[in-house]
Amino acid sequence: MSRDQHRSSGSSATTRRKLLSTGAIGVAAAATAAGALGTPAAAQDTSTGVTAQPSLEPTGEFSGQCAFITGGARGIGYACAEEFARAGANIVLYDIAGNIDTVNYPLATEQDLATTKSNIEALGVKCIAIKGDVRDSIKLEESVARTISEFGRLDILVVNAGVTHVGVLDEFPDEEVQTVIDINLTGAIKTTQAALPIMRRQNAGRIVMISSILGRIGNENFSVYASTKWGLIGFAKSTALAMATHNVTCNSVCPGWVRTKLADNDYILNAVSPENPNFEAVSEAAAASYHPLPMGAYEPVDIARVVKMFCGQATAMVTGEVFDISQGQNARFNA
Ligand SMILES: NC(=O)c1ccc[n+]([C@@H]2O[C@H](COP(=O)([O-])OP(=O)(O)OC[C@H]3O[C@@H](n4cnc5c(N)ncnc54)[C@H](O)[C@@H]3O)[C@@H](O)[C@H]2O)c1
Image (cartoon, rainbow, N blue to C red; front, side):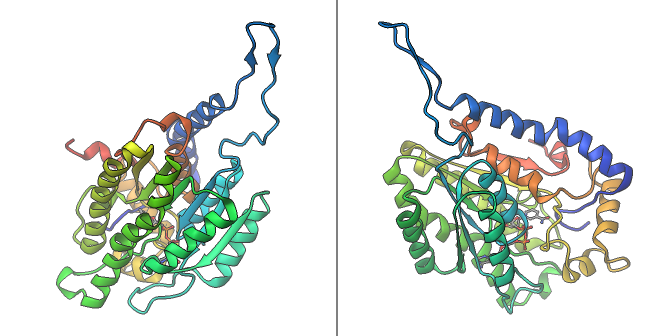
């Protein structure tokens, strides 16, 4: 079996939508409703009986907040940026926007980053797009400083940038192993380190780390990638403990197979399905044979809605959690 596998089309896509409308999306909708409860209520002055009206500030759940998203130029990061922007947050996109020799498929381009920035701005919020590598602590610190100088705050951190790697374990070149660890794990640590001083000073913040279903189970073909995603959960739980008294939450989200270029590329598809290296076919096969829910791939927005849930009112007192959005595969876990 491959990694975060699977599909959607025709009748199974319809089934999938029906399932999600009562599942993950329903949870996100509940979070949004709870967020609305957090908006200022009309207050009654008991001495006069006059009811003061709430202020006429923008009503989006995240209006005036700022979300910093690594790997934001495309895929799940872009979907998160859109979700938060639609809810009123200003956005910082931090993305390498260029290829890495030791990653075997193309990463986002400068054009992707520029297009995402203009799409986010078209939603009526501000957006800063930064070409930067999560392996570069100095650039991350400069970017956080720029965020504070332009937006005055950093409320939400989505630790999302990541790369994948597949193949036979004893054939992995050292440089490729090191790149996956440096980006997925050390890069996540560096990203978080850059943001923590601000969140501590604010005495507020939400951090969401994008792990994977492969941070919950092993996979013989994705052993290094899986190791980093398991490690990321340990780091997220530790961050939750370190920052709890500073009113900062940190939770992990573990997606299954998602329709992004991390999964839908020749390198991955040839490795997981050499006889038919096609994203739809791989997704369909997983839906039929491996996924408990009768569905293939998630769309990136499905993951983004869960990320948003962990930054809303409903989860204000939730930290150190691990949330699987993995086609029901966690029903197979033993705890
Ligand atoms: N697609 C899936 O099936 C799936 C499943 C589970 C988890 N994930 C995780 O979701 C996250 C987002 O992945 P995606 O599926 O959207 O893939 P993607 O390749 O579409 O997006 C990843 C983004 O990260 C950027 N990036 C890569 N290395 C970087 C670096 N060193 N510094 C800064 N930016 C960098 C890329 O340019 C790209 O824009 C990753 O952490 C991935 O492991 C994906």
